[in-house]
Image 1 (cartoon, rainbow, N blue to C red):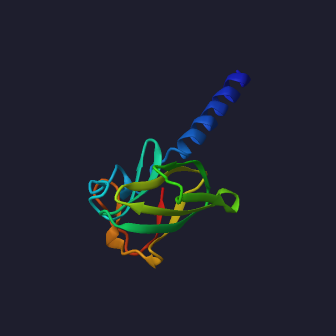
Image 2 (cartoon, rainbow, N blue to C red):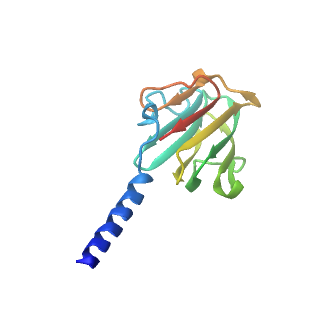
Image 3 (cartoon, one colour):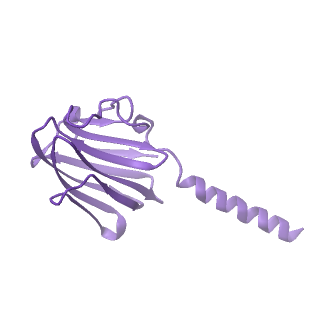
Length: 156
């Protein structure tokens, strides 16, 4: 009987641990942004789905350099570059708490996919061509949510 209770408690803790990392992020980020079309719009596109968090940049055929820093109270894990060319790069620093990137985007799309392990927030600081990008050019989730600033936070 004691072993059954202990096993039940362990299974409960395991399940709780599994669901903690699966909690959804800010609801405005759910689903791919409707306005995300390579080469059609210019800006950042950020969303969450079952595969994790996604950040993409795209332009209207002009060359732009997108740079940014993301910070989390957890750790960035399962980080993958998407459609990156030789001048594009990202790196994880500060023991997994910081993700920095530089994407030179010309008409198509560049980006990064990732998950956050153990954290409840991600802070974004986003720039284009060395300047703060307008929040109107940051699109979040399927309803194309815009933050108030180029520096913003998402939570779960």
